[in-house]
Structure formats: C-alpha cells, structure tokens
Length: 82
Image (cartoon, rainbow, N blue to C red):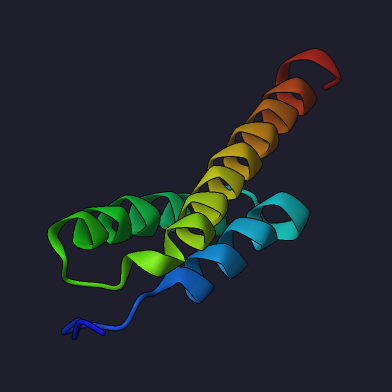
C-alpha cells in the first residue's frame, strides 16, 4: 500500500456540498467547489489518496449545484417576485 503524505479532505468537501444544497447555498458551496478542485489536483499528483475521488467529486458537484440554485432563487426573489 503506497504512502500518501497528506490525508484527504473528502469528508469535509462532501459535508460542505450537502450543506450547500440543503441549507447554506454559496456560503458552503463555494468552499466545497474550491476545496474539491484543489483536492482533485492533489490526488492527480499523488499527494493524497485517490480512493476518495468519488466523494470529492460528489461534494464538489453538490457545492456547485447548491450555489447555483441558491443564486438563481435569490435573483428570482429580487427581480421577479419582489
């Protein structure tokens, strides 16, 4: 089993992504997105274990979706329904 110098942040990214869809929108979605990109880069270069790639991608996609949905809802409230 190879040694990876750093632990993966997959759990944190997944939790932030879920929170962005359920409750916090861009407040947790943007960090999930940015952390996910950085973590995938670390996995590609061998700094972290690539076995958590699916969790990182899921958290990143949820962060993107939660942010976009929240921003569209906010724009709707401000410009159409307001």
